[in-house]
Length: 494
Ligand code: BES
Ligand code: MN
Ligand code: ZN
Image (tube, rainbow, N blue to C red):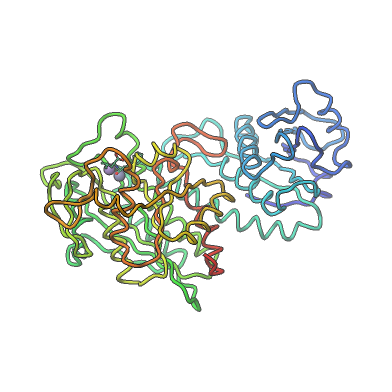
């Protein structure tokens, strides 16, 4: 449970744990705030308020809280949203370890910070809510998550903070939904099974839903998508979600790569590359969670979410390297590597959504290439778009949410690398270089003249080691980013 309390209430309140952020070189709380305790903390040698430091006081005098944790944020001028997000994530995790059930965070409420007050609260709530999540479907976590998280703000901002925190909570819930789907093992999210669980959730939020099953996909000639699914005994499925608030002039389409397991197919992945490939549907998870979040937030923009869901497996019926298929668009594709499967399902999904809904813009999210991880590392997504205006607004959202993105090029002449002797296009190049770019260029061949942006999230979609506000597994990357971007797009400024 998330609540907002006013500073005057907190001094009279019995709480289990009060968390107070401090900077090492400036006061960010009013001088009248718990003066005795703050004086005591300042006198300690082992705590200076540096980023990453913390100290706990038990039964401190002059305060009703049973424990107080003071968390360091470092230097005031260096303070930003991500430092706050991380500090709150870490504080929550410490509280969990201490088996505390309720933590109350003090939000810095004097005007000495260069960050906007809304951004401070946003970052703190995000860090705390996301850090409090533990995946518990198959075993009980060592210590339970917090039951109650509260934030203390000044009397005059209580009302605004309540509204804002409601919105942040909805967006964090969306992020956690995506995390949960990505962590779920592939045996429990086969394409049809995953499709129906998505549809059930979406219907609860009053999204319009449509499911194209194997028969429908065959009838509509989704040749590229079906080629990827051919080796699996699980049927390919495509889910289409629609958020239509009415009275809108623009339609945006979101497409998410939904490979529920990527073995590589006949080009089987080696040990070391195959283990975490249950995460290859993180694009679809982010898009579905964003659609659900958009509905909950009643975003005033019409959205179409398209989720091509397949399992990429080797078998007697699998697509062979060298096979040529006809895509939904009519273009023929020579599949020279069955492990370059994401672009095949996205090609058909992009063509379909463009032809069927004629959206004003399309954004796709995909764990598309290892090459993108080589280029940008595990924490930054690659953005590819011929439309600078659209990608710049996204990158602005990425700065705010700290779901980091970096714009990559789409050089026209590299398209030559995708030429095929026998078909319109080949799904891989003969070169080992520039794989993230050529994958994006492949997709661009299926976007007609629609405004389009591709986000390669192969790096940041999954973490193998826990971070300040995320456990091992799916990160939910893309949900906070897209929600922020869509909020702006709803103002039609993208
Ligand atoms: N799903 C993988 C990309 C990936 C790699 C995601 C690492 C997350 C972490 C994708 O389908 C793939 O296999 N890409 C190949 C493309 C190659 C065959 C041209 C790759 O990146 O090696
Ligand atoms: Mn692959
Ligand atoms: Zn893949």
